Amino acid sequence: LILFGIINISLFYINYLILIPQLIKKKKKYFLYILAFVLLLGVAAFIKTVVAVLNPKDMMNYVMEGKPKTLQADEYYFAQLFLCGFFLVSSCLIKFAADWFANERIQRNLESERREMELQFLKSQLNPHFLFNSLNNIYSLAYQKSDKTADAIMKLSEIMRYMIYESNTPSVELSKEVDYLTNYIELQKIRFKDGAYIELTLNGEIDDQKIVPLMLISFVENAFKHGVVNDPENPVKINIIANQKILHFSVINKKNQQNKDAQGGVGLTNVERRLQLVYPDRYKLNVVNSATHYTCELMIDI
Image (cartoon, rainbow, N blue to C red; front, side):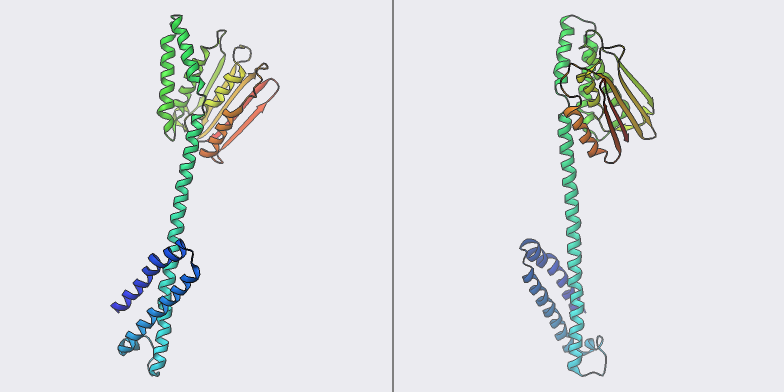
C-alpha cells in the first residue's frame, strides 16, 4: 500500500510539475503530452498489477473471489488504470485551475498598475502654469511691498503641500479638498486688479466625507481660465453639498465671449477619465454650454 501511495503521488506531481509545464505550457506539444500521459498511465497501472500478482492477498482485496487468475489480473489492471487516471486528471484540473487563478491575479495587478500609472499621468496634467503665475503674482506683491505678500506665500505653500503630499493618498477629507480650492481661489484673485467675484457655498457633512484628491480643481481652473470672474452681477458660483455619502458639486460661470478657446478642453477631459477610473458607475457629470453661461454639475457616490 505504501508503494502504491508513492506511485499515485508520483503520478500527480510528474504530471503537475513536469509534463504540463514543459509540454503544454512551454512547448505547446499537445500530441506529445497525450502520448506521455497514456504511457505514464499504462506503466503505472502495469507496475501496480505486477506487484499485486506477486502478492495475491493484496490483489484479492480489489477483485472478486472465485474468478480465474488471468481475469483477476486483467480486472485489476483496468481498475488501476482508472485509479491512476484519476490522479493524473486531478493533477490536470488542479494545475490548470492554479494557473488560471495565478494569471487572473497577475492581470489584476497589471490592471491596477496601469490604472495607477494613468492616474499619476492625469494628475501631472493639472495646470502646471498655475505655480509660475502664482510666483509672478507674489513677486509683484513683494515688489509693491504689499501687506498681502506673506499671506499669498502661505496660501501657495499650503497648496503645494497638499499637491505633493496629500495627492499621493487614495483619498482625503473633503474639507481638505475644499481648503485647497479656497486657497487656489484666493491666490487667483491676486491676478485681477478689478476684483474677482466668487461665491463658494458649502452645505452638508463636509467634515465627515472623503474624496479622491485633486478631483474638483479642474472645474474651478476652467472657470478662471475661460470665464468672466470680474463681473459683480455674474459671479462664479461654486456649490458643494455632501449628504449621506453623495457629493453634489457645481460650477457656474459667465462665458468670456472674447476667449476663442473652447471652454472645457483637456482639463475636463482628464478629470472625466479620472472619474471613470476611480468612481466607475458611481458618478454623473453634466455639462451645459449655453450662449452666456457654462455650467458643470458633478454628482459622486463617495
